[in-house]
Image (cartoon, rainbow, N blue to C red):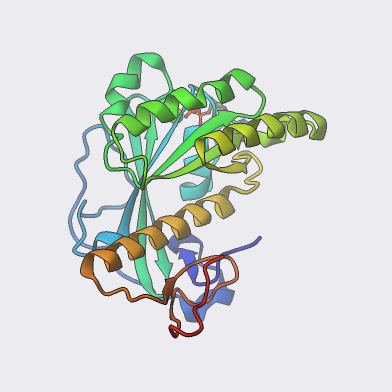
Length: 259
Ligand SMILES: Nc1nc2c(ncn2[C@@H]2O[C@H](COP(=O)(O)OP(=O)(O)OP(=O)(O)O)[C@@H](O)[C@H]2O)c(=O)[nH]1
Ligand SMILES: [Mg+2]
């Protein structure tokens, strides 16, 4: 299983990465519990803005949003469908090069009758994950509407977009290849990164959320640096699968370029 060096989810720290990780205690405070379900107790704000990112997960009913989050956060899979009512919530904690970082994962309801409740939680997202079922082309067609609704409450120029095809285990390779073509086209149109996952087998689930964490963390660090004016020409902030250093300062003569 691959990983991003320097980026670890707290619950799944593999022993090999021990030196990069340091345990950190749960902060005091608690979440409002109405409509929410969280496995951790955290204050909702942080003194450092880049340490928490809000991520919303949207898409048609029964495409597998809840299973995706549960596979990553709890390593569980429930084959029985239980509709999400309004929203659910999970917090996943990471450490990126020693910096505690959390993703707030907002699991929204796909059922029409709960949509207006769920949409009140869209605001302030730094990433939008739009899920569709790889075996249901209508759910892919609906992704643009889900995105449009989510973008009404967010800044389209700064939000990160992910298009996720779910239930890959149910497709034959030939069926998957066909659907992938359409999905890549949609992803290109909406400028989203495309992933195909299976919550049943776990395929790509961890890799996908680590990617979300890496990109949102990077975006937040850049935004903080811009805000504080601490960033100089020639400085590079980057996280990708080959990097072990989050922040590098390059000389002006020989800048290091982002990939
Ligand atoms: N085979 C297979 N089934 C899946 C997978 N992911 C989800 N399912 C099944 O699909 C059904 C719906 O999953 P949910 O995660 O509850 O769907 P949802 O998108 O959260 O639905 P709403 O909360 O109504 O919006 C359940 O019966 C799951 O067991 C998967 O990767 N593979
Ligand atoms: Mg659900």
